[in-house]
Length: 347
Length: 65
Image: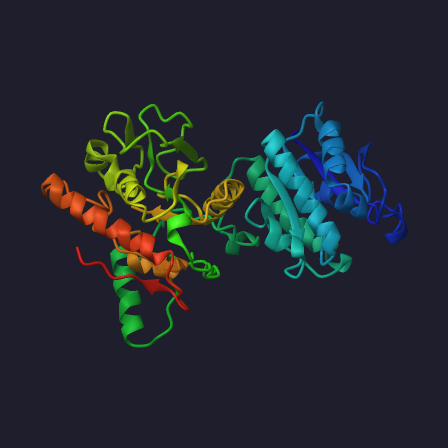
């Protein structure tokens, strides 16, 4: 039988409420509190329950996470389930924090459940399955059941449905599905268009995630002193692709030193982007990453400094969640190097 | 700098400088090298100038070449 490990807080373990929220992490064999309900509907054995005080997880996050990962090091488990956390904010954040760490370390599916108002939803919904839960523990059995139904599918390698069908918060991942019957895509597309032209309601099959507007950056006052960096989603990399950036659905990015190059030479750089014909960019990588034009403007003194690295990843099939993460990682590096402005080229 | 202006607009890029295609945003290989260079030099210049522009809303900058 497959094995599961369950994470709960001090309150649901029956240890105590707020006054005991500093409770250090512990692991117990077998079932504690909500684990009983989980074990009864899960087609796996809940072998251990991990308990941690919400405040301890919140205030001593590194210690709590490393202690718990230590507990798990010698355990065999196929799935990790945290909560449900309902509307309890710190509990929700704790569930998200530990589930994310467990997923990264042990590469097992992680699931949790929270109410829509729980701040843990916004923080972690892209990292894991967070099921849409009730407001309070009165919904414990229902919430556990929804999670367990989905977990059972994962455990049996069965096909899973969309976020809407399964009841978790959309994660910003698009999946293609094969319809067994019904009109073909072109027909559905035309039907939608006709409805749109008639101002009738229709449901898009390609929903665009809610707009996530970025504040307009302050203009650079003196370009002649500014440090400018180049970034691209066009997949320009050294020909051996040292960072093994994927040609589609990228999760990695790289940065490459151009301080001694007047241009990007063919045969030294190429594109690994799988979303378009690479011939033009392979013959002259500057058509995507215009190092030659930037160096010309630099020599003319139009701007102060060209940042020594250009940054690159691949934009095709890349999920919004991954793109946001990579963007944040790159921005952090650019800030460390006091970059004032960025020119980003897309393909 | 991108070719798919509607996508850039939808996803919320604030300063957008158009390029000429997806596979070769800044230089058509069917044209002579000097023509490609002129186009690339011009559009990168527009992008550099756009960094100094004090805009109040999403803006697509105009290019001449």
